[in-house]
Length: 110
Image 1: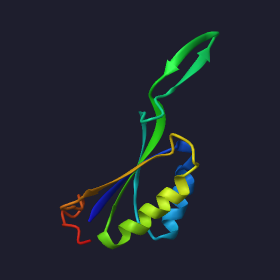
Image 2: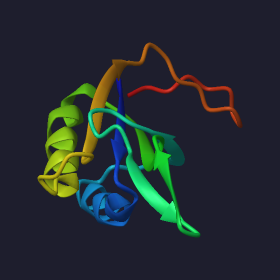
Image 3: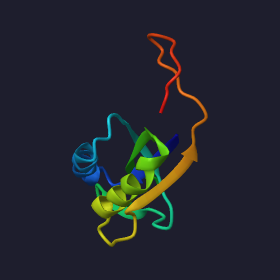
Image 4: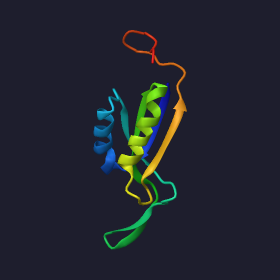
């Protein structure tokens, strides 16, 4: 099992979610987050004053999958999320040792 963690633009979440549904990805967790990478933020003007926005709004998608679904899922996320501009996001893959269903206490078999 693997945990795929994708940090993406908020405007791309629905499109990514729809593409993953077509791949039969059963579930995911989506959170609003803030951060920056190479983009380093930008300057904005509010009531005539310029200020620096260093933590940009992003969305974090977390998906736990069996190993055989990982490559296709990553490819789909990257193709769907890509705009070609700085700030498109990142995808991370982490190993998952075990998972449990809280309601039943059963260990996941993936």
